[in-house]
Image (tube, rainbow, N blue to C red; front, side, top):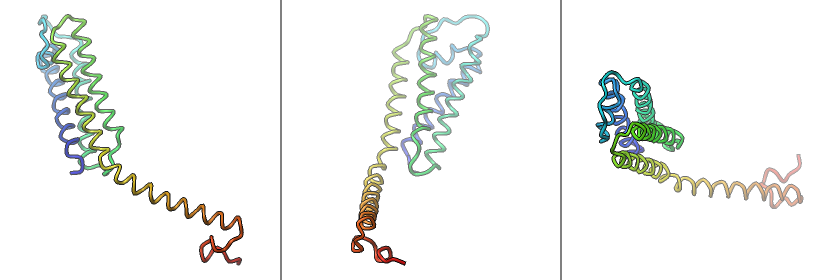
Length: 176
């Protein structure tokens, strides 16, 4: 497995957001998801019209983290940062929207949301760090190869321009 920490974090957040989505679907209210997050809510009678969009949003974020998990496990060795960014930004937006909804409805517990957002940001930094950890080794070697190739091309071009066959390769200095 190439990206062990990223795959573990992606699976964790996928399960977390899938559970939030399931709680919204199962109860028909956002209160169950808020209770899981530690927010003190006032239970109102009847179904909540915002439960279905919240469930869809949570399940969409869970699907993005599943995509990140598959990409981390089976994708290329130099995993694209865009998948990481999309999943974590969507997760942050979902939690932030839920926090704003709690504040509007007067539910308590913003410190719990701050803990979850902090954990999400720390997971994002860890996933980016793991993705970039292998890049400098490949980057330095690739830069050295490019520098040597550029120097050889410059020397060859200067030899052709100046007419000095000693600067040009053995096949290029001769006229045909």
